[in-house]
Length: 258
Ligand SMILES: [Mg+2]
Image (cartoon, rainbow, N blue to C red; front, side, top):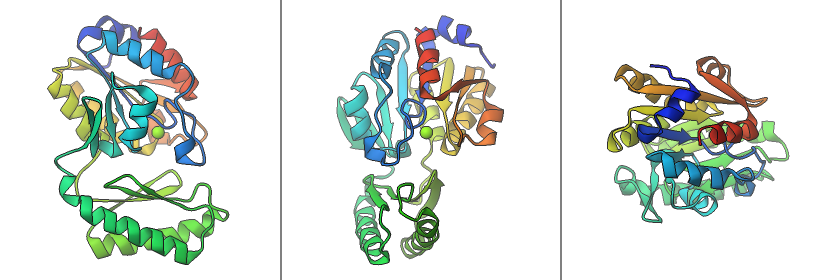
């Protein structure tokens, strides 16, 4: 059942709130490490965690940063579900732990290759088991995109990895199905939820909407929130039950759920 915001608020006791971070709770920035939650967000989320059984943050970003910025009261999943915060500590999920050594090797190879390609502004991001090749801040993003595409392909083939493309970045991942869908379904079952709200701004958030579609079929009340920006994918907007203007609009929506 597709629910309204008011219905979600009435069902707070058994409803889970699932949120992306970048572009949803923070403004998009050129250098990923410089992102921060919009002012007031951490407090609103901690307040929500008092009335809702789970407030889950699920991001492609490292759980370490999210824990520092948002606090241990929240259910934080980093690296698309490869990491989870447990008792204030970031742990690797059982599914990905066996790939840790391999991904360290891939990171070293990616760093050496990027240095050899001489691409100023390109960042190799090490998220423990996922390696990101960021070209948003590259001096020549087009050239960087072509060269990193080739590099990602080579590394993926050499080590049997999965490739993903986010906004102005490529990623290399262990050959596992890590997605926001898996996280939402797992948490919904674990917490015995009867309602779920998911909010995101990007293509990688569509699996979160997929999870809600599945929960909807199991009889849960669901609400999909699309966070609008110049780069918002059309499919996200089409599938949203509600849209808000950027992270500031998202914060207003979250306040209305208190
Ligand atoms: Mg995002």
